[in-house]
Length: 322
Image 1: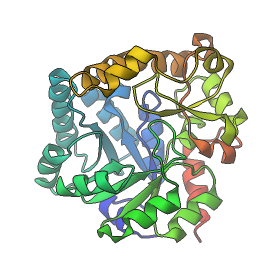
Image 2: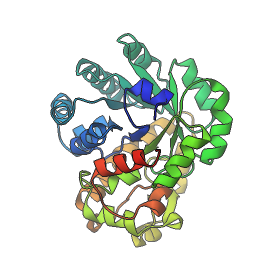
Image 3: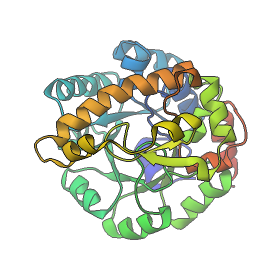
């Protein structure tokens, strides 16, 4: 099935394995791309969670597939050190031949300028129209439409409402959130989306390095087990409800909420939350529920019935379109 997204990304199947911290390991990325979808690199996952040199990690992926892969650039300007590091990572990705980028959490203009200079493409994560318009002002060529069924940093609108809100913007739209089975995949494409991004579905795969406890939590969970917490990064994040979550709650404390609202303090507070959450999510994902922290997931858990090879998922979803 050819769509505007498959043409932009150079892939066979309109399916993205979304970038996930800390679950985007080289084997998973390569397996999705080799099967015809688009595996997307999350540099923080490779460098911080898996302790790899980024260039060597990209070459490891390339040794497993020569098909297109993507790169996720979080462009939030909360730290000069982080911004400098992200600029270095984007340069490395371009040097290693990556030409499809997904930006998020800030102005994508500097990434667009670098990528388009070498003939590449940039899509941007958005949750509503005002952010979509800002992203388009920044020069992006497509939008990843993050809805209220997504894992991680979810949106506030349904997939259908978000599509209706953005369909007149004249760029490819990719549905992100809530798709865990072939029926929903077909439904989103039939609704007009040029592609579908899945994260939670690809955590429950053989190639994903997430701990078996994490994968089993996904298999056992239903839609009602997905809750939002602002204790991870200061903004709502979708996670699986567990006894630990019930005990510690899902709301930031009163002081943290005050600092998150302050124009001069919100960026520092989010940086504090982010650094803390990177460690927590790494421990829970790679070492299991004994660490009693957070398992990120979206409402697509309802359609996930087993742990499978990533390529089998891509091919089954592709076959559902014929």
